Amino acid sequence: MSLAGCLARLEWSPERLAREINRRSGAGTISSKAPYNWLRGARPRRGIPAVVTKILSDQLGEPVTAEELWPARETLPSALPRRSGVSPSSRNCEGQTRTQ
Image 1: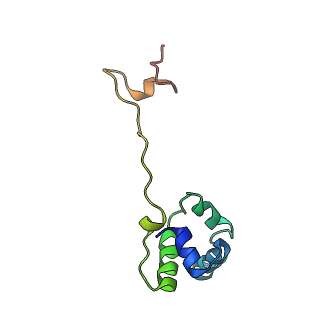
Image 2: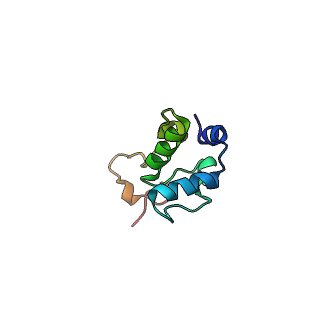
C-alpha cells in the first residue's frame, strides 16, 4: 500500500501524519510539510520510516512496511568503468583521461 493510500484510508492530511510523528518522536522531529515531499517520491531520513510504519500500522490495524510506502528505486552505477591501467581518479568529470 502506498503512503497516499494509507493517508486516504485514514482520511488524514500529510500535516496530520507530521503531527503524529512529532507527538511520538518529539516536537520538531519533522516539519509539517515533510510528508508532502514523501508523497512526491522523497524518502524520509533515517529513523523516520520506522516511526511512520508503526503509526500507520497501529491506526490501520494491519502491518505496513517501509518498502510498501517507499519502494526501492533503481540504482545508478556508482563508479566509472575501469579502463586498462587508468584509475577512476585520473579521469575528469566527462570520464576522459587527464593529461599531466
